[in-house]
Length: 100
Image (tube, helix red, strand yellow):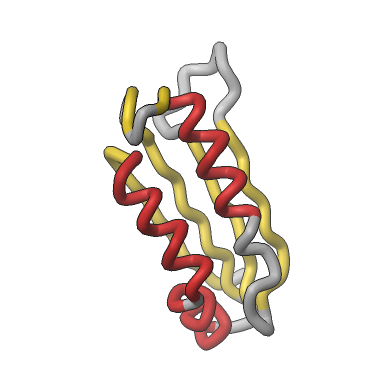
């Protein structure tokens, strides 16, 4: 099984919205990607809590049975639509895929 973790630091203001507003929009958009492909398991989206010294704003933690299911997720139309939004609102991204 593969664990796929992605974190985004968002711009202070983008697409007519604040960082906090875009974090919520991104969470909502990402949650539409739950159970898109066969072999996709755990899927969790979190937003950094105010009051903590966080360097990133939104995190995705998801599990896939194998590389093929992760690759199928990566090219799914819903996922690609989220990537378009992310491109407009983020200033940094980190990703880590590892075997569980």
